Length: 385
Image (cartoon, rainbow, N blue to C red; front, top):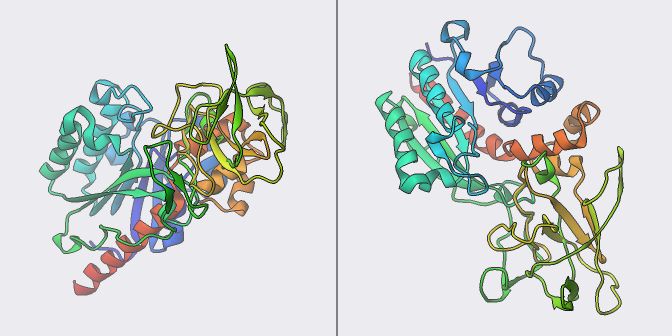
């Protein structure tokens, strides 16, 4: 039976980025969710009324007979085994095999649609064989498949976060109605000085860098950084000048946040070779670890989008000679959450958990945009029938 409202199950739900996006899109009803992280699930249940819905902690123990019928299976299955930030273990990593739990539930329930999300590294992992295995598994179940790498900065948030989204459908009339997205919501970066990655300079107009969620959640601490002046870099031989895009060594300080003192290696003090004056903000990535970079850089140019939030990196904002970390609220905003929703989870979790939950999540505004197209395609199909 084809329903006008799309009923869906929210797998690997985290704090509910998929659910929030589909709620904003309209035309969707959640029948249940699955999340093994107890802290993330606590936030999820604070954000959404789950009374009467099914819940499964471990997808490997999910019995299809206990799950109501649904039209859409959605979720961002664990990406660490495919990410360049992880060890890229793929299907040899137990987290990588969780995709086959998705295939198992799909085979048993036969939903009309699938919506999956992962890191772009999934596409080329093991020479493309991992993604080919995923496509083959879903194709054997009768699904038409389309996918596209989308960047969160093109969907009304100032974070550069590329993720691959995969749509599956049983009705061939849905072909081409959801992907591709050809328009963008942000302003493209404009090079004012060409050069190699990490050396080129952009116009201040643009977006921020990607958020992540590793190493105890410190990946959520991303920010914008503006220096405008060369920075003195501490080396064994004394000082040398470090310019935007170069690695930097910073003196650690302590900083107060809404929860009080956060300890060492959070805020940092920079010195410059001249009066600091009024400086624009720049994004900085894990300043205490010189080997950690994204796309070859540890510091952004003024006006560029935030580094991708992860759970393992430290992110901050360099402004007027000082670096501060992003607050949990700022990280959740970068993932598309509004303040009224953020206010529901801030009192429940530690900063470390909030950074982790933001970095591990999906960007709400991207899911909203996809959901609107999926709902429109579904209405078109049901109208014809």
